[in-house]
Amino acid sequence: MSPTLLLRIEGLAVLLLAVAGYAQTDASWWLFAAFFLAPDLTLLGYLGGARTGAALYNAGHTSLPALALVAAGWHFAVPGLLSAGLIWVAHIGFDRALGYGLKMPGSFRETHLGPVGRRSD
Image (tube, rainbow, N blue to C red; front, side):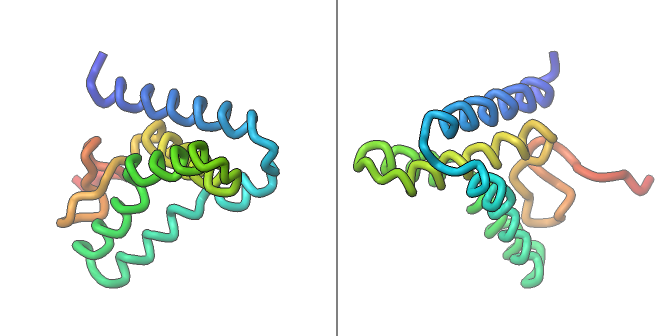
């Protein structure tokens, strides 16, 4: 099995675990639906060029801050933080399962999981 496929399966597992965790909260599924794609607002960084876009996109699609939000929400018993973190983690897992990785600064289509989109060759 290729490493890329393993990473995509791992992303699916992260998505499913985050959704299962969210289901254990009393948070609204409407809230989940409303904010699931919110991390993609970081794509607006590409209006400032590829390097800025990649930096902002990667900041919004890196697991560490999302997991820190989950941990803080759980530890300090702040349901809103926990819910927001789980939605964020679910989004990251979803993107990885679809093959979208962290962006390289030179091109929107180049990610740590390889190129995305149609090839022009």
